[in-house]
Image 1 (cartoon, rainbow, N blue to C red):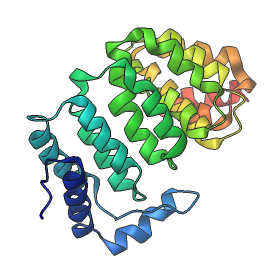
Image 2 (spheres, one colour):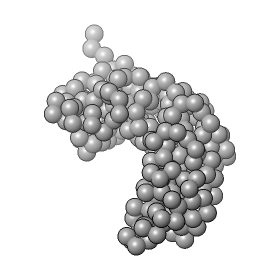
Image 3 (cartoon, rainbow, N blue to C red):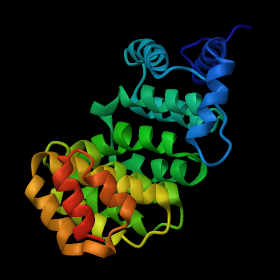
Image 4 (spheres, rainbow, N blue to C red):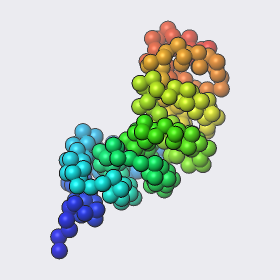
Length: 245
């Protein structure tokens, strides 16, 4: 009996079949250079992946509720391939208007168990955690507490979740507090995430970012500083690099 594609097992089967059909062996090989450890990829270009996701978003949003979308995401995020994980997250993001606080422990479990690379985290955090922060600001202390997690991906998600907000000048106090508390994290991927968040925070308040960097100086990882100031004019970049050395 053929499975109904609008059931969770049916949707999973059809999605994975579609992803395999778009697999590109050359892109599979090239993708590995962006990761420090082996990852499983189909080698699908991001615009193609997002187009496939939009088709599913449009179809499922009409008949599914958010909890069913969470279940689908859970099934897909268990898959090995990065694109399968991303599809689950992107489809779930179409239900953002119906997100609820009960999703937080589920998302944290995904980060602990199923997210094994920065690309998946950097899809999950802005697509799911950022809307939750927007809808339920009372969740911010809970998410900021993830900074002490022994799991790298949980810590990175806590930072990346704020990036869409600080880009608009929102929650800057929380972002700077979070950054300061993670200066001594030993993971390079955290140094890069902090720099990314600070760079975006500086888009709307450049003087505050400059003052923050000068205040903390040598405490800040060099990678973080470089990422944070990469959009500054060359003369200002050189000054800040020297002043924080």
